Amino acid sequence: MKKSYQNANDRHTQLIGLLKVRGYCSVVEMSQLLNVSSMTIRRDLHILHEKQIVELTYGGARWIAPKRHEPDFDIRTHEHLVEKQAIGKLAAELFIKEGDVVGIDSGSTTLEIVRNLPDIPLTVVTHSMAAANVVAQNKLYSLIVLGGVLQRGANCFCGPQAIVALQTLYINKLFLSASGLLLPQGLSCDNLLDAEVKQALLNSSRQIILCMDSSKIGRAYLARFAPLDVIDTLITDNGISDESREAIEQQHIQVITAVPAFLPELELTRDDIAG
Image (cartoon, rainbow, N blue to C red; front, side, top):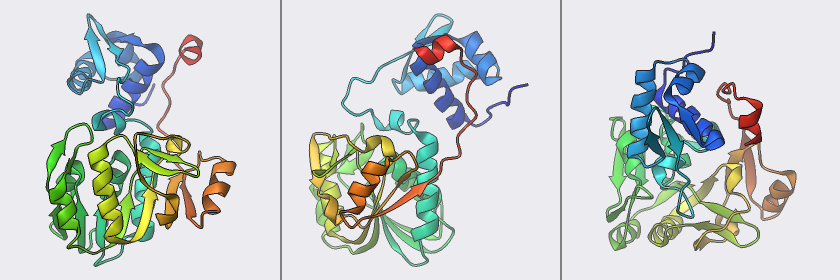
């Protein structure tokens, strides 16, 4: 008997992966593959539909290909999820100490760091709405939310309010995210306003720890916000190529790789894999 996926986030990830491969799948078949009820599948699909990730059809659902250069935050939280979870867990274990003033950049990978923060006194500075919501649940943490205008696609606050606030703050450890890392040009993202806040975070921070999955290495987006030499450490997954690792280390950057604990694979047919 196949294992039942009780965690909603895990199910959503599996459903997105299945629909990406097939394009379309029926509720009955998804229910059988994930070993959950059809009602559960319909609830999950409704959530993914509300996030504009899938299109509902009669008796099933269809994958919606992202129309933007980089997917919205809700989509990105499900992409390369196990890699991001491994990176977030390792980053928190290796670098977070009691009393730290921690900067948390916007992004789906840095959100996984927040979810793994230890129960010790910390001060957390962030412009990420998702990260702020997680941090606010722990009374041991002092939370500073950078203001501005909400960028819904990036799920963060941006603008002069955030930049001015950062000019008065000192962050000893910044966990930075990026949409792309291109050698030798540097780091980039798809949101010009978010890029400005990232630059302000960098200017206010002493130690810079870049956290990104290996699929982003070799990519470049609209807004270039930093050269590689501002980075002290890169934490990525073990999918990074030897060539990329060597080139990054030549920039005097420490590279640490996390090993993902992959979810059990769905039982797909040969046609699915070929597609």
